[in-house]
Image (cartoon, rainbow, N blue to C red; front, side, top):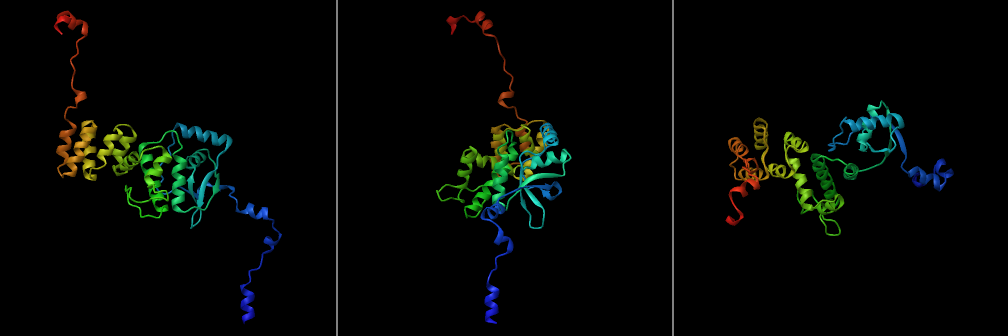
Length: 289
């Protein structure tokens, strides 16, 4: 019985291993580009970057139709089968529009945080990024970085996620994307906006700074604000947004107050009476001044 146990514990080298070279074994570990059916690739969960069938996408689809996908996407295998797209959502959409059935992809084993960071970094390289895309991307990457740092993640907190250099995750992220620590946090504040107001920010109907102040309003207050903006065809200035934030914090903001603030005359709306200097000089000689 003892001999049998000892024999069973010995790991025998397989025939393939016996006759394979070190180079071939190393090659088997390298990442390869595979043509994967589009039907087997699902989008990254909560992907913050919009994939629109706009003019640029149609041009990409035409290029894919003629030349194929020149840069492979990056996917990771899913536990229940199939693949999850990490980088290449636009290429996948273009392939679908071009009538392709497969797409070249690199398959890589990644945990959730690694996948999130790569997904965000690959998309932040784009030339045009909407405020909402940047807001949710910064939030997702910051939370992943905090988890990787081995500290508990707390939304919008800079007191967690230090690395070995003593820097907080938000500072490291700021260095990576060329934004200040404060600006990163201000972008993340936009994720607190209700969708229709956030869409107005993307469409440049509301400026960034007032939008950050509005994000501190409760959801119902934001909905009342949105309804008032739509009915009165106006948006708040920075000063008005700051006043509403303060009133909200004091528990004194309601739909009537919002209406009163939005419909008041702004300084830049007041009519200015201008007279040309030559006409003034005719009646008021320089000696009078």
